[in-house]
Image 1 (cartoon, helix red, strand yellow):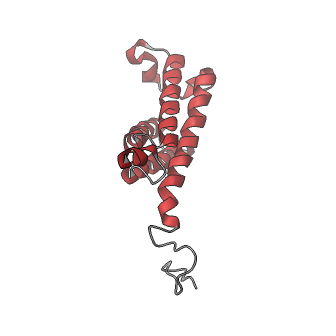
Image 2: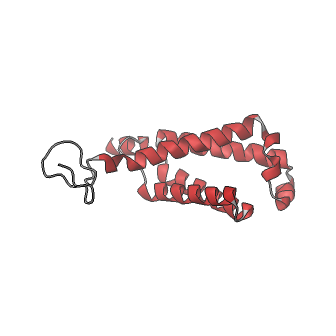
Image 3: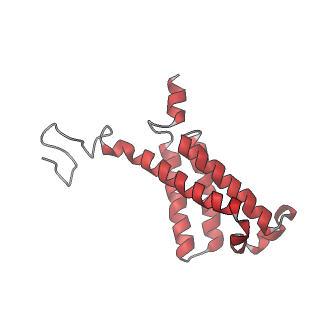
Length: 147
């Protein structure tokens, strides 16, 4: 029988939620694939239709390195697509997640305290958590380390 509070089982049957060999070991995998899907969706949307995203570029961004808002959105889109692909593959997981986390912290700061800013802050924390997890048992990082 499974004790819901502690996650321990009185019998040695099924999957234990508390042990690393149980469902808890899938947490970084689920987080990695969820964030990969998120960054791929946003990145592809920005690459395919940058004009829909230019309103989100802050005023100072229009003068950043002499680029206009469309160019900034397009570059940002490719950054997010690249990060999403790296997360999906589990390649350079820790560094890709850290870069995407810092990216989202800047975005959430620029957007400010509203529903979108709070959402992006929570996603930044999630990406930071993935960075702290590092590679998981299904990532290419782990497979490369075994060889």
